[in-house]
Length: 431
Ligand SMILES: Cc1cc2nc3c(=O)[nH]c(=O)nc-3n(C[C@H](O)[C@H](O)[C@H](O)COP(=O)(O)OP(=O)(O)OC[C@H]3O[C@@H](n4cnc5c(N)ncnc54)[C@H](O)[C@@H]3O)c2cc1C
Image (tube, rainbow, N blue to C red; front, side):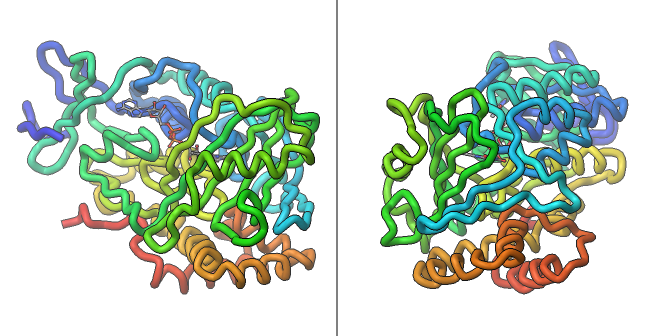
């Protein structure tokens, strides 16, 4: 990050402009689910929005392509609910724990009882279209290479790799788990505490049109060890499945093999049952920024959203829902606060700290005590309401205003876990 003095007036109150520079009200870096959702909401709120991405679209993103009930709820809010329901949807999850199957329906409740599996090549392009249709201007092939701030920490402009300079009143950083732009602004991703890695590929399968998502815990390395992770097979409805394996990693829980070896072992375990044909295509692996393990996610006129803010679910690795939700909340905050340094991490803490802490606690306990997990998970799954409780907790399907016993228990676990699972959305930017 480079510092420069403000050009004129109060720092950041006006977009900075000058010779060879353009200026916008809201600049959004990254056109994944977080950036495009933010662009759509901000443009609909009447703001001038420029959305830029280093990639030309449509572009692929390493992902399981699964849209959770929470992500579907965000699509409903955006007006894309009918579109996503014309694609390949599922009404349940086929959960396998150590070879034993527990078919579960998505619970009826505050979130739609439906999921979808949509290749990111298609999903992200559709969200971007929505942002553009809502009035945002998009530019692809533009990589942010530097960010300039004034003495108070306000972003005044960003520099792009092609030599351009863009001034802005507000910057939303939606550049993904690695967040090169967030890092320039001082983001600290606390990977030593916990993160995840996951690998996926596409394969042809005779079961590629199935209407259930499949998740297998205790697979991929034989039955001897329960890794704190799982394998998945998400049918895309076109004869293909997105197949992958993800695992949590921390100093205490090193990855028990390479991503590729876990992914390949899982495929071999599933090959016959799923009639998987040939070799995996488009193999890719990537780290996941999970559990709120981050510091410095906001400054006076900038906020990190989506994977850049590390809100992905530690149990499931799902992050599209958080990306879209955090984007909506950030846009709500644009007019509601004059300085985001404290209020943005505080809001994310209020909304997500307890569930993320509970999920981290659960995954850590299972990872550190594999035998306990091996016995406990089947025990929990063997009874209808307990199975639904596991599903709601793991998939983050407990809403703030849910009043039933399972929701209260989950919140209690979250509150207790918060004390030992800190930092979550740390505040070290706050002087
Ligand atoms: C293997 C794997 C499987 C997963 N499966 C699922 C799943 O099934 N369901 C789910 O919900 N989540 C899943 N996730 C997580 C999900 O992919 C992310 O949570 C989600 O993509 C976050 O969206 P985002 O908009 O924050 O970031 P991204 O989707 O990563 O978008 C970031 C954008 O920023 C752009 N960018 C980066 N740097 C710059 C720069 N310097 N200048 C300009 N542009 C830049 C990138 O080109 C990119 O388009 C998975 C992740 C992995 C790795």
